[in-house]
Amino acid sequence: EVPPPPDMAERVRATRKHFDFSIRWKGDKLGVLEMRRHYSNYFKGTPDFKPFRTRLVEAPTEKEVHEILDEIVDVYSTIVV
Image (cartoon, one colour):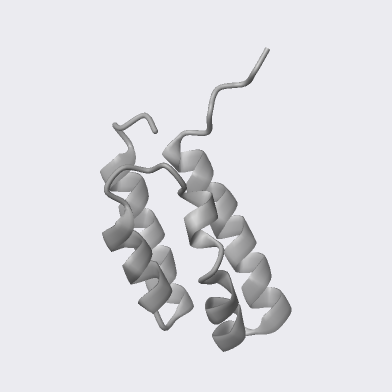
């Protein structure tokens, strides 16, 4: 049996875990930059996600990335992706 696809909260949890590990491993600046290439994989197939992805890849700080991830959960909490 194939498990159901992850909901948005699960996707964001996985992204946040990867992001936090990246910050611990590479430091604030490099960790933020390194994660930019991974966002499209975590949110592949999400409708109308491009504005969020753009904001994520342009976010200069750890705090701002976390705020955007919180917003993503709020916006997509009622949508099954």
